[in-house]
Each structure stands twice: as C-alpha cells, then as structure tokens.
Amino acid sequence: MLPPRRQKILAAIVEQYIETGEPVGSKALLANAGLDVSSATIRNEMAELTALGFITQPHTSAGRVPTEYGYRYYVDNLMQPKELEENERRRIEAGVDYRSGDPEILLETAGEALVNLTNFAAISKAPSDENAFIRNIEMVPISPKKAMVVLLTSTGILKSKPCRTDVEIDADLRKTFIDVVDQNFLGKPLSSVGTVMIQTLAASLGAKALSMSPLLVTIADLVEAASVSEVNLAGQSNLLGYKEYDDNAGQLLDFLHREEPLNMLVSSGDTDSDIEIRIGSENRYKELENSSMIISKYKIGENATGAIGIIGPTRMNYSKLVPSIKYLSEIISKVLSDVYEEETSSGEEG
Image 1 (cartoon, helix red, strand yellow):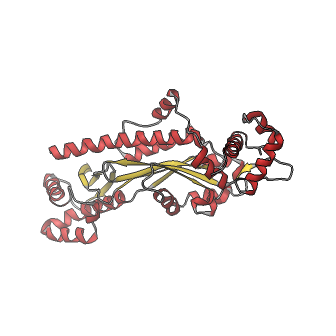
Image 2 (cartoon, rainbow, N blue to C red):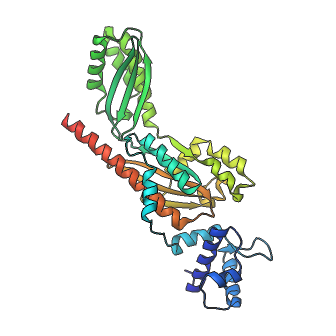
Image 3 (cartoon, rainbow, N blue to C red):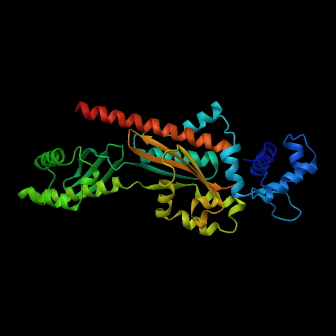
C-alpha cells in the first residue's frame, strides 16, 4: 500500500486528468488537491510515483498522467463511488422499456440509454442458462400455407420465425401441432432439441410427418437461436470523438464488429462479482489496450445470467460511471426476474 500522502496525490492526478485530459503538474495539484505541503514535496512524491510505475511523464516539461497500473490502484483502493442523485436515477429509469418482457428488447433500450448517459459504446448480452427450458410454442396462421411459429423460453427469450407448409393449415394440422408440442417440447431443456430428436419425432408421426416436418424444422431453428446469447453493441461511433483513439480508430471499430471476441469479453471474468472493471491490457486484445470496460452482471431466477456495460477510453470517470451501470443492471435484473416469476407461476397453475 502507498503511504497516505502518495495515495492522495495519485488520486488527485487521476481525477484531474480524467476531468481535463491534460497532464497534471505540481502547481495544479497544489492549487486543487488540498495538500498542505510545499510544491517541492509534491514534486518529490510525483517522482516516486513515477519510479513506481503509477504515473508517467509524456514529455520532459509536461506534467504526469496515470498509467494502467495507476488507474488500477486508484479503482481498487482510492476511488469513492459517487452516490446517484434522484434526477440521475430517474434519467436511467426513463431509458428502460419496462413494458417489454423480452430480454433482448429490454437490453436494446437499456443499451441506448447507456450510450446517451455515458457517450461511450454500450455492450450487453441477453441471459444465458444451460438449464433453460421451453415455456411455450405457438403457431399463428398468416395465410393458407404459412404460419408464424413463436417460442418462449423459461428465461423470457422470445423467438419467432415464419414457416411455409406443404399443406393447408387447417384445424386438423393445428390440433396435431398442439399435441406434438405438448407431448414433446413443453418443459424440455433447450439442449435436448437437436437434429436427431427432430428426425426421430418426425419418423414417429407416420402419415402426418410430411405436413409437420416444416414446422418441426422451424421449432429446431428457434431453439438453436434461443440457445445462443447474442452480444449487442451500440454507440461505437461515439469512440471516434476521443483523442485516445486517433491512432487506432479503424482497428478498434473493426474489432467491435467481431462477435466472437466480444462474446468472450462479456462472458469471461469474475462470475461472483456484480461489477467488474477491466483496464487496458486486462481486456486481453491489442485493439483495447487503451480502453476500459465496466461490465455489470445481472441475474434472472436462480441460474440465468447476462451482462451490460460500456467500452471507452481509460480516461473515464469511474467513480461516476460504476454506480450508474450498477443501478441500470439492478433495474434489468428486477424487471426480467419479475417476468420470469410471473411466467413460472402461470406455468405451474396451468
């Protein structure tokens, strides 16, 4: 641990640099940090912090800026998260679509709210749960030989897809569909529905296999889509406005269009922590070496988890952003958990 005076100086350098974007000198610290010491003492302490790797001097005559190590020490030991004011809470709440029980729609609106709140890029992932099961499947005819098939999972994921059948969708086909769904899909884990299961089921239907096959294939497609938790990104163009990305803006935007590494970034990390801050190289990808991520995990029910957070330059106001993102995550968790409990209750009653 750093001695108290060095901690105070480091915190002041980090916070002033976050606010101004300019290297911080001893005169600025003396004027703004409330330190009852001489400028010579401050310079000596800054030299020690530089030697220890907490701050660096971009130019010989310039002040100091925090290093990745300095940011990490600040976040872990010195940062004082700011309490959200009532108007800030209302602003966050106003950006969430409470009316939608669909996690993907809710996360889309929450991501947009986060973009507007932070002016950074927002990243989110719908809840995933290896134990999720099929809550309901419906077929809604939209023409004589075409229907919309809708699938709802236990975690609230809603997927739909049109299906064209080889025969007319009459009362007999609708009854067969309902019977097959009730007997073979409802309450079954998503992981149990695959090619072999669909082929075996179709073979067991005898003469009805021809009319039911397109619908069964559509159900399998919907289950596959519901099993994959997509990563959503919004506001990435905001990052072009920060000087930190002047040298790698193209590479960064190209990276942010690649779903696989983004999925890994959101999914990895400390699963026991409700919020995680990754600074610079901690993000593991060269394209993010001058970026920070703040990711908050949310939970639905007992098993399903998702995440929402931001990507921005390491020079971000951590003490202000962490409480905002955590509060937004708590709202998402509550809304989706309420929907989950309602669906579970209605399912048990049915």
